Length: 231
Image 1: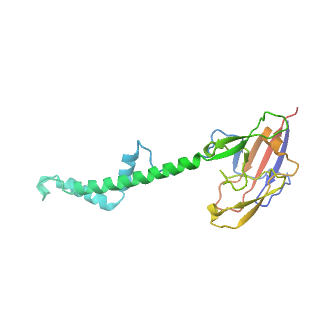
Image 2: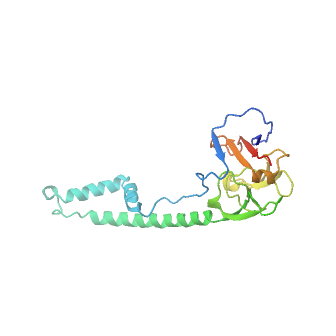
Image 3: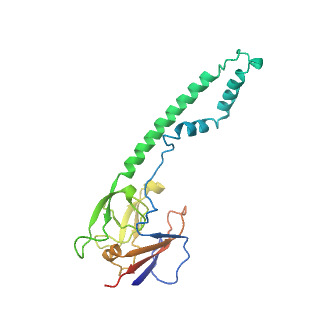
């Protein structure tokens, strides 16, 4: 078994020198990883309790609830023990809960639409020798370390590292307005040495080490290793 290693950064460098100090490690198709997004705020079985807890963070709601409870104590009540504040408070809480539920349903639908978009996974074991084959998968099923094919004009389904271009080039043009609001086209360079073959990369074990999450959108450093199995 032979190990090949290449370092990469926002300005690619492939010196293959000493192991850099990175804080995160990923393996191909790590089952613990997920690309599924979830902006939905509530779950159906916790909605009532969670929503009421959030609404009672407002001091006005707490005030009316305490007042309604005190109204039930006849010695100090001016409403003869009837919690008259309870009805308007219930109406306010109910209307807010319905609004929050409707907004959360819309978020859930948007999440489902995004997660079910399709992309192409480069197969690790193609049916034909010396070929590269792909299979359609949902965005939510993408796993760390997989090789994906993104065609011209398609949205990028995850945080990806450019490892090659099917037209033989070593650059790609991207629009990043969904990340930084800029509409100008940016050039991204391939992160792999020229002697690394995409076909070989798809068939061998891949080990990726990279820096932890950063707010810097324009710098990313790491090292990628492949395990070449002797025939």
